Image: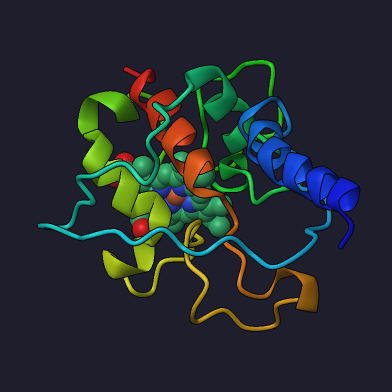
Length: 160
Ligand code: HEC
């Protein structure tokens, strides 16, 4: 690689996380290898430690969980978001969920609810194993990024 090309590639690598952390929550067709899964530790049905060092952003979290192109919670759950007319009724409403659960409890529930209820229909938003019929470009990818999980948790905690 020439020196100039190297600089361009390096700049792109630096910019990529900024794009993810910004407004872009709609999933474009993923390019390149998936980011490595963040390691986490489960303690008493919770994941106590955040998956990222960047504190969750509740406004972005609201956009993450209502993103219709990315397994929105509203397929199954009702949420106190009147501007979203189509809401699910097949799972418990998430109204007041921030009073009933801690961040650590919500983190495990979002990462992989099958660890709590093996037969649940709720998707595991941060898991790559055990999935079937995954299109090639999504293989090895989680539904949510680690930051999406953290932003979603902080938003859910505002639902008191
Ligand atoms: C395909 C349906 C489906 C989707 C999509 C879904 N869930 Fe669920 N969720 C469920 C079901 C069913 C339950 C009931 C318990 C169980 O089966 O695990 C549940 C339970 C929960 C609970 C515990 C509720 C309580 O009152 O105890 C939380 C919190 C939750 N979901 C959050 C979310 C969030 C946040 C999203 C989106 C990021 C989401 N769910 C997406 C089906 C879904």
